[in-house]
Image (tube, rainbow, N blue to C red; front, side, top):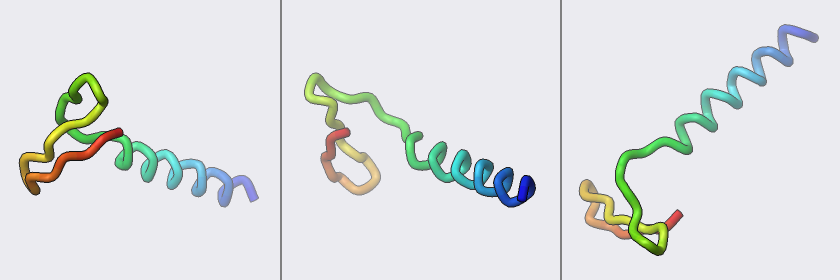
Length: 43
């Protein structure tokens, strides 16, 4: 049971870390342009 809990804890840490990180500063509204796609989005 400990092994399963450890596996899920590591999996959640890896997934959440990659979801948060991306480059690019934000403007005063918390938004920015994605230069790869040309899109504009907010956080």
